Length: 507
Ligand SMILES: *[C@@H]1O[C@H](CO)[C@@H](O)[C@H](O)[C@H]1NC(C)=O
Ligand SMILES: *[C@@H]1O[C@H](CO)[C@@H](O)[C@H](O)[C@H]1NC(C)=O
Ligand SMILES: CC(=O)N[C@H]1CO[C@H](CO)[C@@H](O)[C@@H]1O
Image (tube, rainbow, N blue to C red):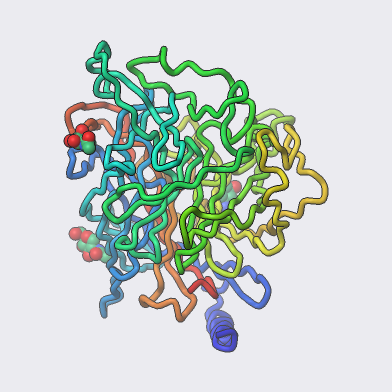
């Protein structure tokens, strides 16, 4: 295997040096004996903002994306077709959270790699196929509503919402209540790349790790260590501080003492390719470790679990230091800013591909220019395994100001892809900053999946599909199974990009 890889990389080097223009755009990262290469942007496409699923609800899906491996085929004209599972978070929640039923959105995608394309539709075509609703151990619907309760099921205690009426503000005087698991889904991995084996989802209320069967029914759960669990007044309290728009009184909650910062849970999660090891990464630092500010929250915990049997066992915990960037609009003492992360993929050999970025910049934001959006690599083999050392309630790996405890070695970081590369974007008539139009990049890039070039891992080459979360922003919004309409004041398509990369040793 190693022998083959080195022959291939020699070949690549020979090839790229013969084509100087190509070589210029390529970014190469060397880790150990392996070369990781980014060959640039090869695709753009989108799902229109007004699209609805088979339940009549607005489609959003960019919190995570996962390839159904055995669906991939490559036609003789070079067109790739495959099925992918997209993950929405908790529904349209600009005016408070809703009883949106968490789900997977299934798409058939066709893509023809190109060095440029300025057509209106782009060169990635998304075709909606199906929806899988997520239900609990008993087959009852989960909910996107903020958590005001804890439910006990199958021996697990999970974040839940208890409400009167239908969860959309009707029948609030009803004496009966419903309790549903509160899920704000952010990470998705299919077991061995096949929906038939079931899948794992990570969430940011818990933050929790949920295993589902192929029908979307919950079958297992992993609770975070006490240091990561959100605590208010000494008690685990899963609220994200986003009560439903129709009722505030049951949701009032004090400031958090410790644990994952609100709305900053397990944004990244993935499985090893054999489905036996699960990796979960917080978006940014916990509150006791600097999580309260965007300039102190750079030390994040990554949990590693053996999920080959149930209950899962924690086997390691590592610290990643997130990259930083300068925001000239913020005061000097609030710089540099931490680029919190939105997605993680395990790429073999103790390496993870992570998407750190700024926030609130891009389409439909006050400022259209993003200052930092990367897809970078971290090497976990350089990090200390701190499992069990700082895992009790309130335990700290860093100070409240975000200074890491001395003596903790972190995972080594390598810059890889700059999503905001303006020359690359221009090839697809795209831009970062400037006019707010459908070719301005969205704010929230949150999903990644790797599509093997020529349908095989043998070449170590992939198309990296990166998707954005449009927050359900459409003027023609539909929710509660199509029964309610909403107008979010703008139409933001769910944009997607494809980069060509070399990632050795993934299979
Ligand atoms: C995408 O759809 C357009 C319009 O229907 C079509 O012309 C194009 O060939 C399709 N591209 C791919 C890669 O399927
Ligand atoms: C889940 O929600 C849908 C839509 O409201 C409803 O039709 C279905 O009966 C619910 N399922 C259960 C088990 O309550
Ligand atoms: C490579 C590249 O063009 N990166 C750009 C990403 O976006 C920021 C903000 O506009 C620029 O400063 C970088 O040059």
